[in-house]
Image (cartoon, rainbow, N blue to C red; front, side, top):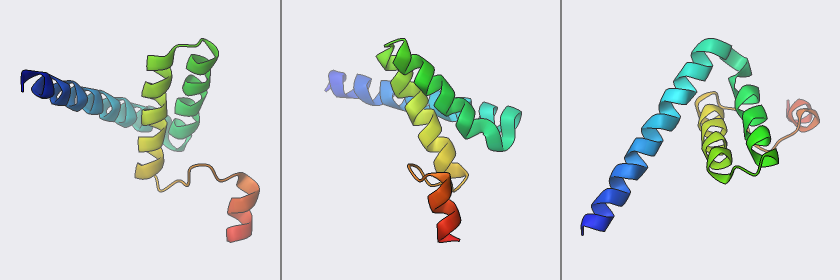
Length: 82
């Protein structure tokens, strides 16, 4: 039982850390926050830093959700849909 409690506490702390980073990036960078998070994700991937990569993936995904940005859709497809 204690193991499960520890898991939930770590998960909650991780989510809070992601939310704080998202809020900070949106405040500082505005609409460019998603691109900043994506570039940091790519840097972490190139450095083979898996925990950092997963963190920035979560940040980029949360920014996309908050800004109603479609993930995985290229610019040309966005223009065609309009």
